[in-house]
Image (cartoon, one colour):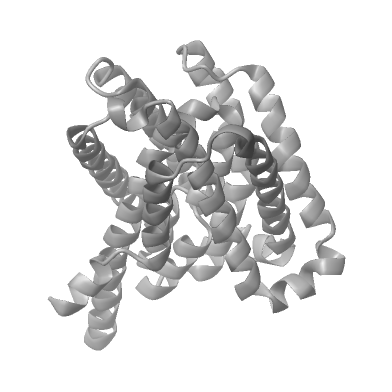
Amino acid sequence: MTTLLSRLRPDLFTLALLAAVVLASLLPVRGAAVAPLDAVTHGAIALLFFLHGARLSRHAILEGAGHWRLHLLVLASTFVLFPLLGLVLRWALAGWLDPNLLLGLFFLCLLPSTVQSSIAFTSMAGGNVAAAVCSASASNLLGVLLTPLLAGLLLRRGGGGVSLEAVGVIFVELFVPFLAGHLLRRWIGAWVERHRPLLGLVDRGSILLVVYTAFSEAVVNGLWARLGWKDVLLLGALSGALLAAVLVVTTAVSRGLGFSCEDEITIVFCGSKKSLASGVPMASVLFPGAAVGAIVLPLMLFHQLQLMVCAVLARHYARRGQERRADG
């Protein structure tokens, strides 16, 4: 029980995110300070995606690229199953949930998978790590392109306020730095690898800055006057239901298609994640500033929930693998 509770405990980064929300709620940035902070935030976002591009190893992609059935299933879960579930939720909850929260719930369904946690949980559970590296990297690379395109198509058609001009902006502000970082990897890749812990701080610092800026503007525009604890609790329940549905479907389909246990683990963990590191910056570019705070709230809840649930699930897979090896 102690081990289970320790794995369910929020990590330090989640606590830092909560601290940024509390700080923005109590001391939101106002007036003349808004423009300089906004410029710094956009610079931090560009740096974040530049570093993501510099970290992307072509060798890691090529190493697992041959397992195409697995990769197609992971990508189908990320960019087909999730968006379909998001459309169902958006239709079913119209009028029952704050529009920006509902938009945020749908937006998280369009995001790519995580890289670090997908690989970490796959390794912990005894899955196919090489395939996980390839799938998670491919998901993030394609997500820079597919997420804004899906958002522009589905949200614009549904009146969500995303214009094609905003989609163009995300290519300039996110994809161009990402591509530049990857093209420069030959010269800066070794430095990036040597300073990975420091650059991890840049990652987290950039996200915290975006969250603080977004929630500041949302608070100034009356976010907490519109939302109550019932909204947040409902959002948590919906996030849990969404995650559970994807875990069940990916597990059932991978077994039905005859994948090995190691490949099933990779499919489940890579196909059920959504990237906070990509989602928060994208939301700040795609949506009006006053709405971003509420829109990223579902993603923040889902982020912590997926970490807690997948930590327990990884332990279950690892224990089952040990039992199989003992029996064999």
